[in-house]
Length: 535
Image (cartoon, rainbow, N blue to C red):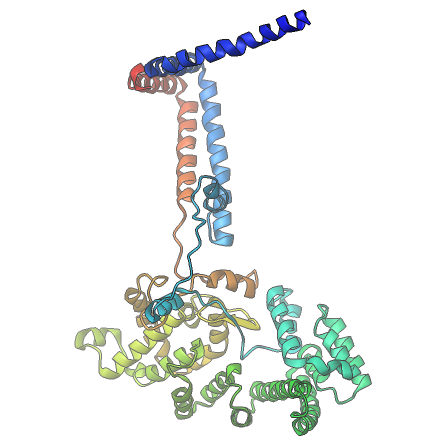
């Protein structure tokens, strides 16, 4: 026991000594600690200086070559990432990962408050609109998209676009009562199939169960028919079956909510079939018949204006050169309370340009000034370009066209492709219209120098269009970007660093002795400007 007590006292001595010394350590002057730290840093600096003074020119050459090579790789990767995704990889990593680590993100969430009407309107205007819409003039997969694939070997539709179409078909052509009919159950599975051949096979199975299955004929018309004539035959069979089912649903739609859902589904099928039949007639040259079918469809189902059937009607009337009828349609749908589209805005500009384009001359207009009609035409063009700034490059054939997607993004490049694909011929038909567009469209950008912050006639241009358009348009198409993005800082920095280090490597290789003398002079000058007291 006495030995253990002696060991305990011996173990307690260091802690007691530390407690007595800690006040002494705290009482040491702070300048003494700073002097010790400065001496340590200075000794490290002297060691590095001695090491660098013994280096040979080969080391400097290898150093500059390695620096140039690494910075060149970073520059190439940054440029590729910017071209593909529109952002700098280094900036993206800095914002996403490094900024939270250094406390740059504010975690405080705004408390709910009662905003005024003006504040709500401002917030709504600043909110980007990137809703994807069904293309009202979309082509037929079997008769048009597939033929393009057979000829060129390229896929004109993206997976994202086809997936949206599959969702549309399930929303349009299915309902909760499909389980009561075996043919509709088969078609419900068919719309979910990814393989086109599996969908076609399921459509034939549905017809074996029920020869009057309208949705089966719709699928065959869209995907199996290789010509517009064959598609029209299938759609006529679908129309016959769809009208019969629609009349039955009308008679019993008030019996239960399930019957109301079935009536909505049968209405969607009937409207879709009639619209596609009108489009078949338009493509086969029976334009007056197509116009009549579209007008009857709009009168019979006036509440389905969200399907944008009037855009099909506008294109057919322009083909007939019935400009008075086109103006009447615009008077109804080019309203401030209704959603706009490129077809509405650019058709209105085309009609106003038609009144002055034949006699328009830039030289004459610069001398005498613009007349009232010319001012109205120019303002209409500026309005259309502000809504969708991508269209003029396709109309003026400054960019090549591709087949339009099945879905479009309003004010985006996908909408511009879809509009120009069908309406370029109408602009060419009016003499001088493209010349007037060529002379005036770029003036729009002087009116809205900061389109992402403030618009002139419309809301600020949404900043999310590029990402959505890249999902909708095929990869071989170069997506139009507005406004043009400036190169990120790190691309300029890595390019400058690569060029500077490559120049140093070349000079070191050509003049090794002079570069070593220069490096030592720079090091000596830097050492002279860093005295011990600066630490």
